[in-house]
Length: 184
Ligand SMILES: [Zn+2]
Image (cartoon, rainbow, N blue to C red):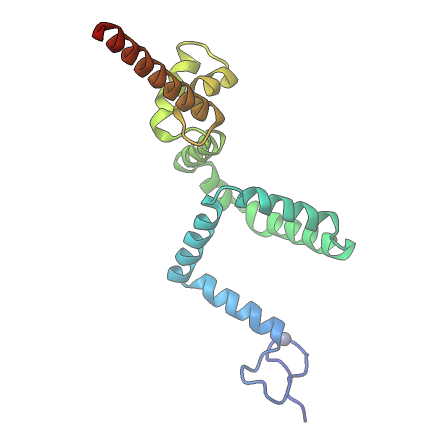
């Protein structure tokens, strides 16, 4: 008599050792990894490292957009149902709502929003940015344009480096000219 999966009616192959079918075993492994704080932290770090590489976030967004555009109706509905279940069973729970509205959580969320909005601005320039906005009444665009020459990797910074280099060359040429004139 063929053995079946421990958690679903699927028949198992003769060489199966785990006692679970492939999809149940995958789910079980994922849950085990999720329950392990060390593994969770390692994964979190891996994800952060991946998205810290410029371009990776953009690429992921495009992949997801393409995937959603071609998603079978069945999966679309399954995902929507899962979302409704999550809302009903977890997100609407009083303790979850209380935790979400706690001052510490809100402050952390606000900080995250600022971090995301000002991702282009290195932390060392954030004070200057705030100063331009709140004291000098620059618009966000103007403030960014004013600070970008300070940020390596931007076109404005490159332009400034080139301008400085040209200045240095000009000054050197002028000095040499003066020295030549003084030599006569
Ligand atoms: Zn199974």
